[in-house]
Structure formats: structure tokens, C-alpha cells
Length: 208
Image (cartoon, rainbow, N blue to C red; front, side):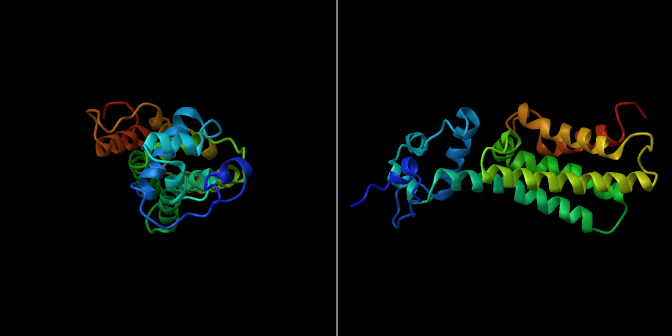
């Protein structure tokens, strides 16, 4: 029988096999994301993922064809809900201001729900086609958000002396920075976090 791990070293894609090796695909993906974040994608091997799960490399290949597939699925986990959130805000009825405020809150919630995957997304640099595709999708999200900020400015809901593109970058830069320090096990709930980010973004810190 051919070595089921040959795909990692030689570039050949190994097809997932039938059977039940003891871990489901979400567990494999979660272990991969954790290692990609801690060690870096390039420094992580399928063997490392198998070791973290306490299984053989063949057991990992039961679920995925390659390490690149795991990266693609991890980035998809982060991007799909963010894309849906922004698409909903762009296409919804109501003022641009209310839609922008809603997308800020929901973006915080998505980040908390998928924090490891979003952390990985924010660290990719375009070193592979998979990463470059993720960056293209991120830029598309950024473009839609900047347009929503611009419409809210044109409505007169946001101050007009600041560049909308800059406002969008600062606003969602704050959201993205949460991956560096927020822990769901801490004293602040995701709902409180989302409300605080929206309040600071749109009302500031000045007492009413």
C-alpha cells in the first residue's frame, strides 16, 4: 500500500480515506488553526497536527487532503460570516448610520465566535494563492465598509471633516485589535464587548 503521508513531502494531493479514525473534521481544523497561530503555517506540519490530536498522520488525512486545504478552510471560517454580515448591512433598509452601527456590533460578535480563525486571517501575508485569495476577500469587505461609512457621512450622521476611508480603517482596526487581548473566559461578555465598541465608536468617551 502506498504511504498515505506522501502528499505532504512530495506535493501530491492525498485523498481523504473512508473510516472513523477517532476525531471529526472540526477537531482536526481546530487543532490546525491553533498550531498555525502558535507556530506559523509554514512551520506546522501534518505530523504536528496529528501529534497534537494524539493520532497518526493517516488519521488526519482521513479528513483532509493537504495542509493547504486546512488553511483554506480556516480562512473560510473567518471570512464567510464576515462577508455575510457586511453584505446584509449593505443591502438592508434603513439609514447607513444604523446599518454601520449594526455591522460593527455583529463584526465583534463574529470575531469572538471565531477568534482563532480570525486571528489567523489577520496574520496572513499573501505567501500562497490561498492567502492571496483571503486578502482579496478582506479588501472587498474593507471597500464595502468604507462605502457604508461614506454614505453615513453624506447623511450627516457622522462628522464630515474626517476622510471616510480613514474612519473605516480606524473603526475596524479597533475591532480587529480585539483578537490580541479579548478572552471569552474573562469578566466581559461578548454582548458587553460589542456594545462597548459600538458606544465608543459612535458616542465616544465624553459623558452625556
